[in-house]
Length: 343
Image (cartoon, rainbow, N blue to C red; front, side, top):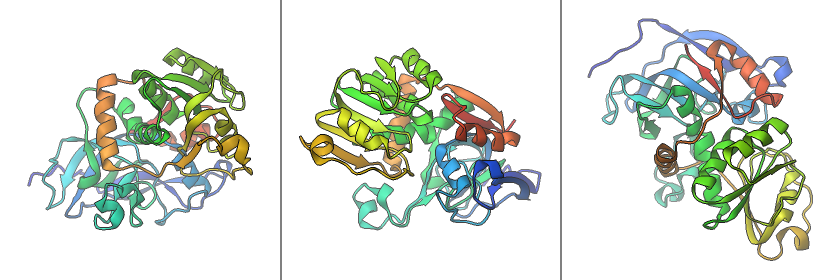
């Protein structure tokens, strides 16, 4: 087996030591040994890592870290440096992506019926194991994605969570062909998902509080762009809530046409107010959650994205400024996606 292990014995990484408000600087930069891959693992040299709102939830304590001094980041593009003894599908030098879903048991009823995203033993990059806010990381080869050579690192990285989760949310929203979709919030995932829906022939209405995000939505082809609490100009066949704001659940449900579906895409949501059955759920309106994704979701979305080539609006940060990128995300100063670059 050929190996290109790094000459350096240490790697740079950001970790969450004591979760808390971003103003308390919960991220700390440190050096630690370069890890060696286990039998089914890849050692990856990170080129780019997207900055996701889930990373913010981890840093601020909405999601309790599951490993000590956890390194966030689960939208990772890099190169394979070394492979474990049982890896057959990747070799050193391959371009690879590590995404949110990092492992499942493979034997439970959910795994055996194509619903591995619901596996009780599922593991996640940047939560259960160290993620991509680092120079190197380990990834299970069975959950990694082979990436094409053409697109830039910073444009591929957001597809690995923002794109894949948005794809699953769109599927969960059950948008009919040529239907009317409402998108609540317009950050990283939303701006990719809206383009996916538009490419499929949908009419898209964006509802978000940020004026710059509304301008971007219109540039990308949205039929309208209003404030989060405004009613859309027409009843919606489906809606996706990307903003982690429970107050918007009744707002989005009330905007649905009869038989419409609202999918909530986030891993964290503030409390949902009391719903009125007649106004929000009657006439067969449906409220659904979205939990992670399957590897099949990832493969299908990445193939579709390679055909449609979404415009990825990237704000670039060097890895050394990961704390600043997360602070900008917390303050809603990012339109599109933030990406950390190793060089």
